[in-house]
Length: 264
Ligand code: XBP
Ligand code: MG
Image (cartoon, rainbow, N blue to C red; front, side, top):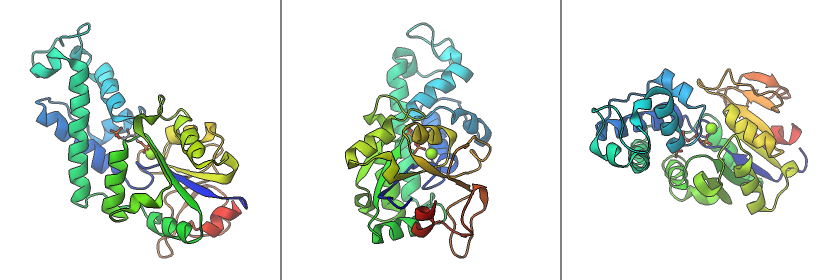
């Protein structure tokens, strides 16, 4: 890509392994705090990740695994549910999600969620070479800024010209809206940008926005369908920690740098 002008990064699973060790235990802590006996195991969470968005994921869980939560508009069947859930289930879900994000921020501030290999190096190199940076994510802006502050450093959100996040678009990934939003805000065309994703939902979103995509898989996404991706890797790699190529032509490189991105 000789006309490469910007790199657009997904967040959860791409910049850091936030799902298994961040959002998932934070959801569980919020459930316990609310008096629920729900427990999202590592395996179960893999299934729930098919739905993007934390609030949407809680609703999907209720539909699939705890349908007694609702009885008509109000009033779950099970007496084990807290009063607040009986009175107003929708508000209860919103409050659960807020509590989840509070725990998530605590885990971040405790330094429990590092960046994935190669992420800091590539971002620093891209900045030094004048590439523009953006974020395109399903999670909230607050979660993105907390992650950046606690990993790249305080104020590092300013490295990104646009942080396209959360409910700013009506349809979350796999819809392409959040990528369209980011490119529109930067005044760029898809041909000038590269996307970085970790999951099939994110990859679909980027593809349907017309973007070429580099995928770095994780334990939840290694068997997803990434047909048509420029490169599928286990991570971005470091000079001392080469990536493994799962598909695509890495031109003999051992780690992703701007030179490789321009050659894709
Ligand atoms: C991943 C998501 C998010 C997170 C939880 O987003 O689907 O929902 O799991 O975050 P992405 P919220 O990979 O696009 O960054 O609870 O804030 O939705
Ligand atoms: Mg992701």
